[in-house]
Length: 91
Picture (cartoon, rainbow, N blue to C red):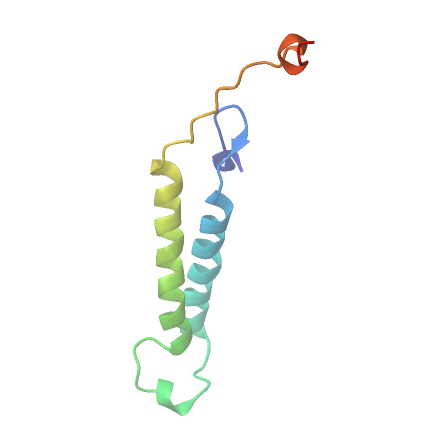
């Protein structure tokens, strides 16, 4: 979980979702090798339908992680501290 936090414990937006996509659909890709074919048209295919559907989601997770680690943080807005003299109209 240390990878989830960067710089003073701030979570990186998108990191957990990217890891989720890679781990879940990567595991599904591997499990599909063990599993028997469910429909007849998958018999001659090197990769079955579950593996074909897992590939784009693993790639999307990789792209999301690349985006998370390469994007620049948004600049913090500069605001003036509130003072009672500025907020009260003059009479």
